[in-house]
Image (cartoon, rainbow, N blue to C red):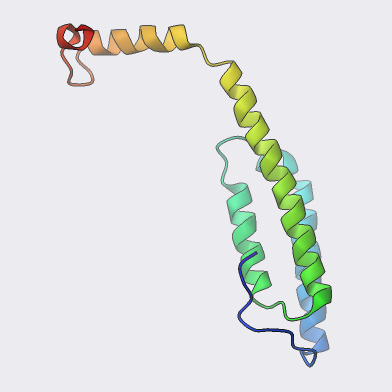
Length: 121
């Protein structure tokens, strides 16, 4: 996540640290539970999760909590890779011929504000 605002603070309140660890575990579990939704191409779920993680990381001042943040980043990264692979797999199904045919039809009807005759030149 983003850089923490302050350095190591061994005197950080134990109850605060415990709550932070609970929130990280909740975030990790939520992310794992919603995995299928999060890895869908075009979704913004991973970005939302990263923003939540950044808010938590701003409170991290000790190694134990930093380990949970690293685990969160690692899991989110794996999901990001999976999302990218799914995007790439979707591109294999892309029909260039159909795109060109649709583009020509759109241009012929003047929907792009381009004269079809001048575009063909």
